[in-house]
Each structure stands twice: as structure tokens, then as C-alpha cells.
Image (cartoon, rainbow, N blue to C red; front, top):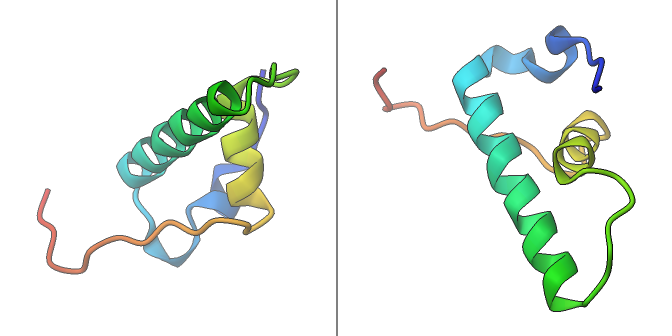
Length: 68
């Protein structure tokens, strides 16, 4: 189970919704890349995606004109 402090991931006013969507998209990219390279993943794709955002390898960018 992933135990992450959400405050570190939700900095700069990022919404939880954006975090969930970005994590799901990144996890799908990780899975697709592993399939294309015929690799087996030791860690779960969602865990790897969250780690990418924690290490700031990838950033979440929200549109300023989006309305919820």
C-alpha cells in the first residue's frame, strides 16, 4: 500500500481530482511502455507513477480556465 503525504503532492494548488487523473494516465503510460518493451514490472504501475510525481520527474499541470 502506498503511504504518501498528500500535501507534498498537492502543492501549488493542484486538486485531488487532477492528482488522481494524472496518476492514472502516468500508470497507463508505464504499463504500455512495459508491454512494448516486453518487461515485467516488479512494482505496481500506480506506485511507480506516484513515485514519479514525488521525485518531481513528472509534474501535474492544470489548465487555469478549467471549471469544475
